[in-house]
Length: 55
Image (cartoon, rainbow, N blue to C red; front, side, top):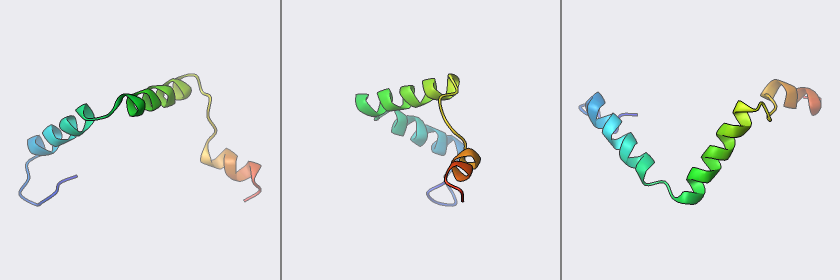
C-alpha cells in the first residue's frame, strides 16, 4: 500500500482514511449492499461458480 519506500504506516493509514471519506453516496450504497449480502449469505463462492459452470 505504500506509494514510496519511506512512507510511514501512519501516512498509509491516513491516506486510506482520506480515500474512504471521498466515496460518493452511490459507492457507499453499493458497499453497504454487498456487506448485507455477505451477512445474509446471499452469494456463491468461486468454487461453487466453477462447479455450476463445469470448469
